[in-house]
Image (cartoon, rainbow, N blue to C red):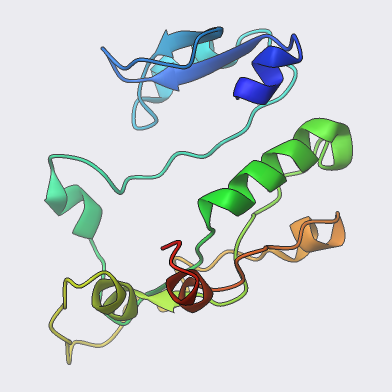
Length: 160
């Protein structure tokens, strides 16, 4: 958002209580898990960039709820998020919901191994093997190409 603020674009962000933002960004207190708090955040806006996910919380049960080590997640590197936001704010994604993902969904088991926190495998069957996959075809068709194509590329390049 610093680039948008510098360009004179009015920016606001949904934040939890007490969170600090970059200068020039207006905080709107709320929570993605509380739909009633979202109305104020989007009132009068012309564009919404949704980057929220539950990966950091004191309630680790919330993070792991219905996850299986073999579940695969569609992921995206933070460098590519910045590129996608710029593309979206240029108008290329207007009135479309585009999933911005890398080129290879990665299993929870693989992610844990890569970050040095091994997770025990499970013999329990996967209930919903496609639940965390996102189709990035629309974003690619609108001009998005990830610079960091996979989590393994990020590891090789030291940008994990």
